[in-house]
Length: 190
Image (cartoon, rainbow, N blue to C red; front, side, top):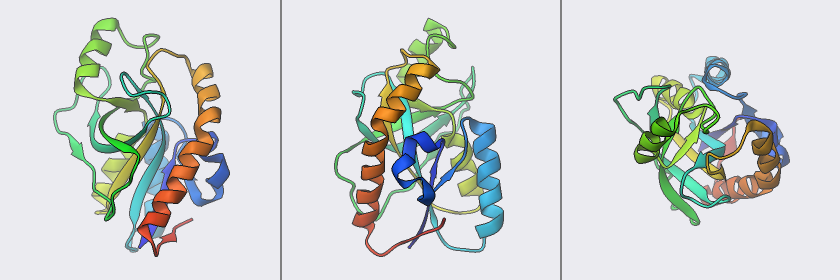
């Protein structure tokens, strides 16, 4: 099985960064990076595995989440959910979660209290790249799986997030490597 690992920034995956395709932060950067990758590999059979950080409103910081569904939007929610694929093996230590993917860092610094309240009823965690990666993977008919580590509770700014990413990077890298080991015979597309 061939697997292409994707993450937003090198700081999230510094220990394994040579094995990971970095998108940059946000949906536009993720779209561009994924399209460029797909142009080079579209005729190959492989799975996309997205790893990285996500904010969450209830899961403890450091929790590992298996994303089962992605809801996309900005200040409004798009109506159709995006259902992710499953790995052929169970991944211990993860909790299933629904992810909201937006153009903005999800925090009280960006969204109103009412919007955040509604949002926490629709999703368990939040990032800025997953909907773009998922959409392009599905357009090219490639399986897509995603795992996130909780970095915050929607209560920090970007500078604090960067510090948390530094603290959590080894955990997400070790998790990715152990998940790849669970899959057995595989080849990373780098």
